[in-house]
Length: 57
Image (cartoon, rainbow, N blue to C red; front, side, top):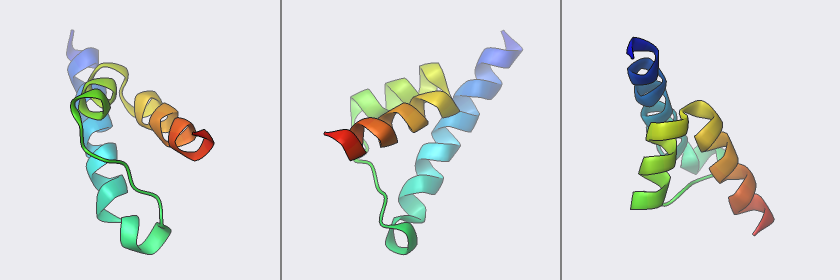
């Protein structure tokens, strides 16, 4: 259970950091229910998946 919460917090921090650094990197994700849920449930791999899907679609 503790590992899930750590993964959730790291995923949400990764999403926030990605959007914070967007002016410098050019990569940003909209903060929607889907992005917050995938970052929360899947953690950093969820944020990575969102970035890949955003680049492909």
